[in-house]
Image (cartoon, rainbow, N blue to C red; front, side, top):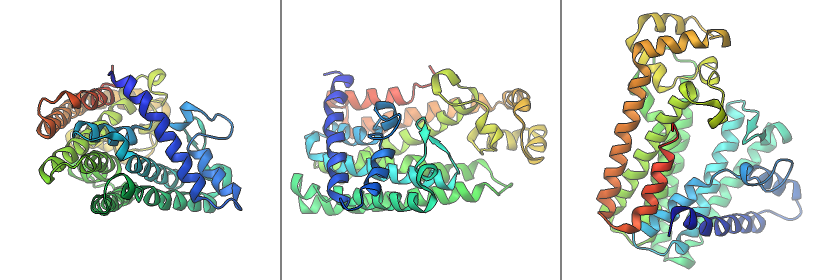
Length: 337
């Protein structure tokens, strides 16, 4: 079965599970609170629908990992629902901290309901994630469910550490390339690593295979973020839906920027002078190119991609059950084409 067919089979069950958890977990006496979650998850409000819901990459990764580790993906649905709720909790809070007014083409939760209520909505989403995860007691065993809780709790710590670093870096002017990796390891790759490990755990994989699945997800997340940094400067805005000026104008300390800060004194001097105006972006991009930042970023993404593929091979060998998982990784890492 093709990846598209598998995803089309999985998505309705993921969506139904998410809606069930939100409905069961929210007090019917407070419909507005449930409405905030339903709005953020793309089910209700102006502009709701498939685009507003996002791609549900993390739950699909969890289910495909279970399948690749010789398990029944249906048993992993509670974990898939949990990781999607956890991801969306982090988005609601990130939007507040980053002052982001738009998410998936619509006003963010804090813009519509205010900061205080958006924090509450995020807290509910976080709690419901672990409530959903408890469903593993019915589809697997108490032992697996307990271990799954530990994995997801560790992921939560890594996520918040990554967000802490992201916020702390905004006012620092002494960052190096080495500082970049722990930040994106927390913000981006920790949850993907957790998704892959949870899938393997639920399939009954031993600890060695679980570590390989986790490493696959971690490397996939690192490569995904590095490529995202490249797209933020050199990507096609018509394809990505994101301005190629915003990362530089906002002063984002992405991988190409940190590389150029170390390699090009002219670029470093201009960067330290402060805000970059939109009219300067083409000149700044030329400086990045001259410093070799684009080549470095792409080569780093390619190396991490190879490492992700090797980790997957370590986890499953040549098993054809991993074909869909490998294809999903290829799609996520082929966004420059």
